[in-house]
Figure 1 (spheres, protein in one colour):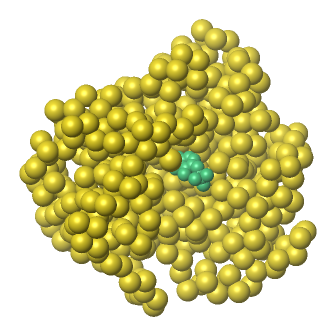
Figure 2 (figure 1 turned 45 degrees about the horizontal axis):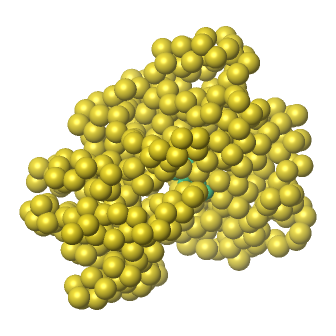
Length: 460
Ligand SMILES: *Cc1c(COP(=O)(O)O)cnc(C)c1O
């Protein structure tokens, strides 16, 4: 591995938070008490926490300074105006509705833009996104390219929409039965895979012919823009902000989880261009979130988000971010560990089907792999497979995703390369005794978004 491929941290550390590794005996007790669900492990018992990159970001000194400038007025906070101005400039959408986090925005959009029975095509599902679509009578239709479902295929832009699939769906169902296209950049569950600018443009051209709107899931849009700059012709010298703005010029709005690419710990928003939809969203936001000038966020949180969003577009930041993730992936690939390829923007995904070929999908191999990695090393990860996919609302059958993965998600600006080495060594060591990983069965299965709170036991 060439160290020049992995830039050093473009920051120095001003405040530290100690971490602690508990003993193996203690970890055994912890994981069993957590019902083999890494979501249920107390954070103090975790050594390196790669559960998620959501809300786990380290803020900059400037963002902390911004926190002190919170205007906590109930209405008309100046921090809202700053956020609105920043998002307008960087994303180019006309209207902004703040929400407490991404799913708050998904809730609003699904209510105002879906009529019961309408289809919502998307480039692979996301848990909360699909939940809100279905709750409002929408029918999710996966139109991602087939390659995205193949963990072993290392090609760029595996998040792309298959335009033929999308066109077929529109023609079969009729344009009036398509609510909108939900375009995720990057695609979390495909392995953090990006969508090319060309594909985004083509989705816009196709849907425009039928008068269908496009709403982005903008959660990791800066990471997506980095891949475009790195791998798509014509973008090698473009500023990140220009690429992001061009991406969004092909859409009618977006939902955003500020907990990812906005470099904050909480927050989100909905963007819209259509005045009538904006007016409906404002009516609903007061029911679920708060006044349209804070939407569930404190003034200080909106300030930190405005500053964080601008920082996220700095090239040195995003280059280090994506390449640190790639470093972990490259170390695992070098050791022959099965991971989803190519390495995406926010996480390395272990391919649990190839890691645990002795287990069937109904024995929840990824869930068990995540539990065993914690046991091995105190590293916390997350299942992204059959447990996360949940059940079909009508038939009650498991959704059976082709990708059965464990996500090692890297928080932004939090860990160093040495931490990545520790994680890689732990995974490699676990791979050496992989036959000992047992299957699991449900002890408790929640009806909604089951992966968050489900409990399991080992099958002997
Ligand atoms: C996290 C996430 C969401 C939901 O956002 P929250 O802030 O967690 O509510 C939506 N879409 C994607 C792709 C995400 O990763």
